[in-house]
Image (cartoon, rainbow, N blue to C red; front, side):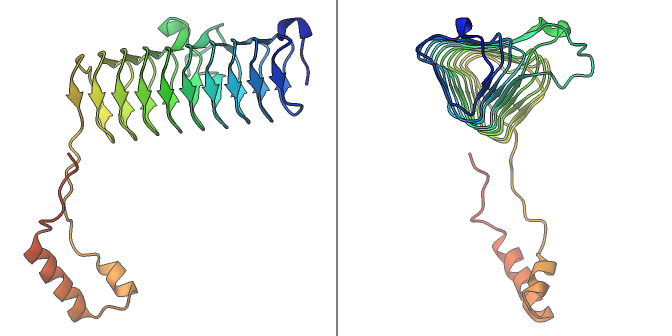
Length: 238
């Protein structure tokens, strides 16, 4: 561990395998778990918990009582070809929870120089928060939500899993977005929105049936039965 003692509170706990670069600030009662890597411009507040294998780089401020789960990568350079190394930052508000494999980038000059996650947010596993996103308080991003650059998310918003939000979209407070949605326009406050996820049969799985040893007559019989039933027991999830 390479650290400047004066910037690390005496009550903080740092695992021997963690790397904390000189200049990083670590607050009271904060825990940095095994194999975490903390950059020199990172500030961790009080009672922050980095469980293990967390990487935090850039000018990143993590406020009090935030918990970060393994393999999250925070404060890395944005995936933006216009980024030229400007001193932008990432901020994460109090009591937020960042689950496994979440990525959140620092901001850019073209977007206000900051990416911000508010207080009491739950960012579930595999979410991506791109440069210059501004996320309010009490927001839930369910697993695998992807926010492109410059997205604004209001307070108390929930975005369902596997959804993707186009750059520059604004989502109003207390909105709910259903899972597997592609959001390419602004969402009004207090509204419920989702993409059409209708399910339709496209034919018989002939190749699969042949591989399973079905005869031509058996395959024809399956096709007939499927057409007769019209898949009346299968409906879109509402």
